[in-house]
Length: 127
Length: 165
Image (cartoon, rainbow over all chains, first blue to last red):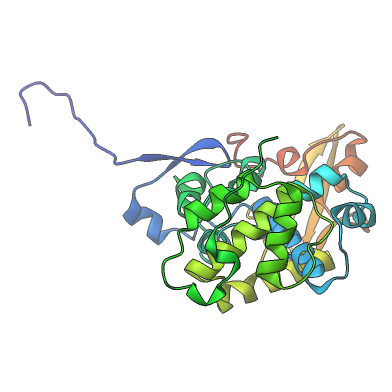
């Protein structure tokens, strides 16, 4: 320790973005002992909804977004935006839904990630 | 609008899947196609008539299919999880998978003073109870208590973003 009586405490914190907002996460080894951070329930709910819609479309129960929106009492724009979540890259969906890795961008932005090539998607969603 | 005259070889051969389709070039080509061209492409890839969908939607789903053929699709485990999630969301019985981390264990009593009275809300497995009435969400319960729109979590100091209370 140097001669002055300053004590320097180093805490390895990383600031990660979650839901578009920065959030401080404790260092890795502490994190592991804590209960898993889990996925934002809004993100899970939105993906579940989009997936249900995708399956209905694939089964041919509904053919257009307008029909779907009318049935759900939602706007076309909202339905077509949310529906894109069901076509996110498979490994991105896996990390979000199975491994529950927190999403670093807002739900709104997440919807548009689906149009990016698959290789570019994880970087946008998780970093 | 500019028409793209390039016709790539993928139309012809779904057999060359693994043999290094240039996925990025394919995706770029989609972006330049007109809607009738996209519909034609749909017919070639899916073997059925294109749905009556917007261009953005056609492009998204064609792009997905192209990448799925090249890289592989959803694993069965992920698909199962998504199915379960979809069931939970459509049935409206949230809890198993989409548990809100802010929600305390069922049976927890939330107490707060409001208007000079102490109000106690009990957390149920599928909602909340206050004075014998059941509510689907805490915010609705708090609306009944206060007559105003509150974020229920915030009212009881359970939200993580609002700082400690």
